[in-house]
Image 1 (cartoon, rainbow, N blue to C red):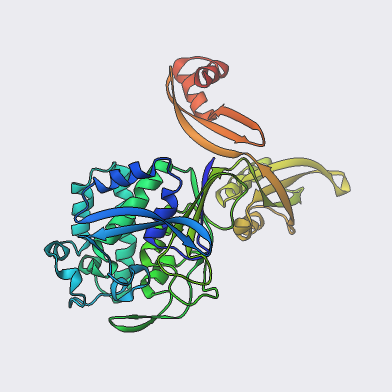
Image 2 (tube, one colour):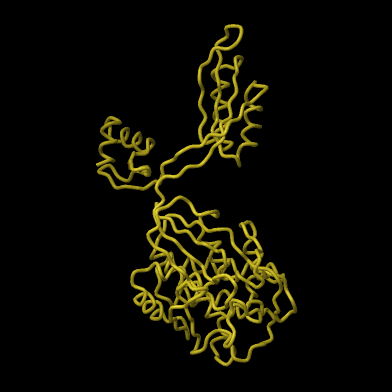
Length: 413
């Protein structure tokens, strides 16, 4: 399984993520040329080597009409821009160019992205999904409808550039899963047009709700709304780096200097089978009918158990009985315990924790002489197995009046 791990130990911003992912792409200059030929109004991307705390990485510059966003200071840590929601125009330079006026609302951004950029449909969808997360956060924080949100606070074209670049790079790298570390947001306060706000800024805090974040020891704004929205959209899970063989590493450098290397680090590699732990719940019953036990097993599966099975046992007073066992995740355990008590006659449930080794599993659809069928591919620990999905084998066997074995062979060839 192709895994991308994103280390946000110094937060994240759109251009830092762009730069880090760019280091994973074989033809960087080619990517930058492709990006610049998209024709995002006034936008030009360039990349140069940058060193932070002795580590060399890439820094990406986005010029909008020949100048960098917030000339003189950068938008990652520039709150006049990040949180400029007043509709008065505080920054003269931003409004020297007419077309800045046109593209403030979500509908305008959608018009540029969906109608003017030559991008695959899935990339356009990613870009708009990320913008929607930002707009929804701004709308929530300011109490105005999403349609009224003006995007000058993010430096509109600059944000379009960052979000489009990251979406294109993710499409090229095409990982099966994206694991993101807990996100370091920094601490302190920022100045914006409305006064002094806490870090993480309100829109960023809203986007990051439900995700693992921490303030850490560095004063300053480390995660921007754009960075937060990109992470939230592309992450498939959050946590420490999984067991993986790393093939590629990228460092994306921010503008500012802190006592720690101000970078996002990405690692791309193969996850080859993993280990985790599961909960085993079991109980013994000697006074339930087979029908009742079957009904209870179905209910336990519905409650989220990974597996439910029975074992015939001999119990006290020479009674034959049944042990009902369920395997589940810790997060589902309470619900499954309640379900077992409700649908069985037991008065006690035993719990144990099992460490397990698992192969990575993915499902794919394959074309066979009998039409489409799903197969399960399991790999890791040096093995790879491909197995046809039983429901599809059964359907093909019935429809074509062949045996299960013939259907299996037809799918697996």
